[in-house]
View 1 (cartoon, rainbow, N blue to C red):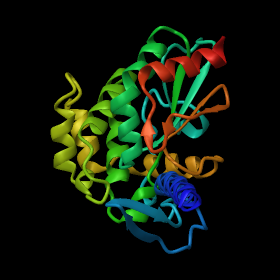
View 2: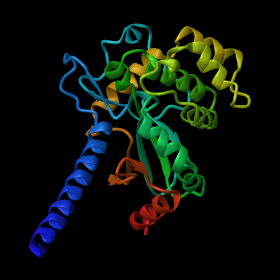
View 3: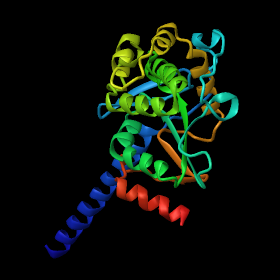
View 4: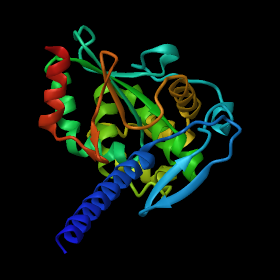
Length: 263
């Protein structure tokens, strides 16, 4: 009888370990975006009610890329495809790779975003945003592209306006299976939460899709990187583990990670 109980306990422990491992692997799969070629068909599955997308990412084939390329003022990086927030002479660089429809990006921004910004404001590092629109391809719709084009219009108004609008979008992110961000009027309503953003020039740029070709170019540059999932965060080229078992790290944990790299 004693041996039987020991065997049962061992089997139970093994089963718990197997389940925990499977859950961790599932969380990793959910957030991973695998590029298998621009011509590949997108495959969409629902895992525990969360979108799991595998397939090609939207890029130059987007109709938005057919218009004239207008790069917003204050853009940085290769062909103006990077948005830099913080002091230009900051001693370190934090690279942030995101998609506005990515639920894990929303979790990171709403949980740890203020700490990320505070360290930039303090001059610890500058933040370089590398944005993508692959979820439009994988989930259908145009929400990522529309939001990114509107973010370009905000950037044209000022880096501070971009950052505030970026934060508003994540604070009001719809379910990733919804294409609510594809509605220009909804985007403009959200822009109203940023004081001074809705100038006549901003509204016209959003309505006309002035920065849609730029958004496509930004996504193309994202595709050239070695990043395979969002959010991805690197400090001076070193990847930071900002998600643990599918959950964003706390502001305190993030700050500790930064200190480990910067000394």
